[in-house]
Amino acid sequence: MDDPEFTPDGFGEAEYMMEKALPCPHCRKLISSVVIVRLLRGRVNFVSSLPRRGHMIACPLCQGILSVELGGI
Image (cartoon, rainbow, N blue to C red; front, side, top):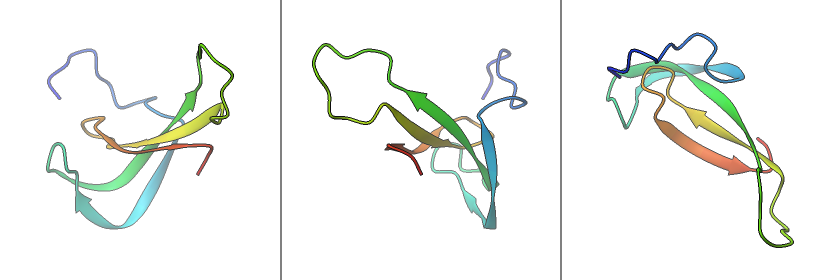
């Protein structure tokens, strides 16, 4: 990512190491870890049965979203 504002330090809540390096589908670079970012519901205009929290899994190099899950991992 060519954004000068981007710094991988402090990005996400946790980092998980992978048993084997795999290519990121966004930047195509080999990654050996993923970053977990917490999601918090900000607002809904109706009574929602959706979970209030979730997690997003992202590439630590390009910050591309790899997966999103509501309710927890």
